[in-house]
View 1 (cartoon, rainbow, N blue to C red):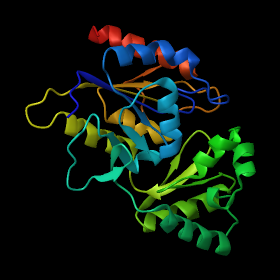
View 2: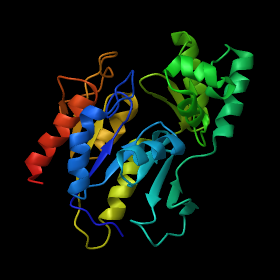
View 3: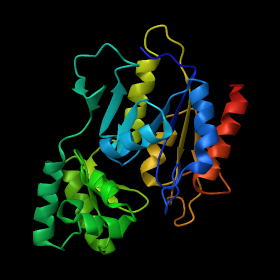
View 4: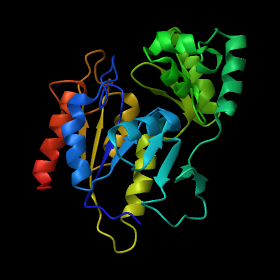
Length: 274
């Protein structure tokens, strides 16, 4: 099983990736430093399996993945050769599910839409619609639609209707998580829950507890920042930090996006002497 002195969890859009262009070149020096130090870089994102794997291949890493806002944890078989009883096989990875399937939430959202206000849901959007909403390429939009556990909704509802929607989802033991672009409907899970599972796994038995860092920029990252030793809030150019959340335990960057991410990771590595 994987042994490591430290582990980094990161959100993607607006954090490791530029919010508009999805570029990450400014973060490559720190990405390479983590890879050279054998420190896993774990994507913790609302993105899908196929979106995350394409990015991993581009930057040349193979590490655990937390997908769809903590609905699932993927573990590379190269790092975790022996599976556990509740782990399922997924290509060259194991996956651990924390959530119900996407179609459960799509059914509820369609019922809400029919009775209340028409919702703009990913499952009813064309690839062109997704491209217009996100700026993604055709292939990337296809991957974004390939969801297994969650359903993104474009937040066009009034405050009253949004509250009605949240109440309905909560009655079914789900939650709405706010990201940089969408409201995402799914089970009452979080990136922090999946990260804690992985941290416990890596520190089980007499193993050394790894140092942990997390970086994020939106409401669906708060539980992740609470689950680690060191949290970094990447300042957004487009929206303020969530109201009512105390960022006193986090380092808040002055810059945004991958350049801020790069500096924050190097500062953390320097502090650990790694």
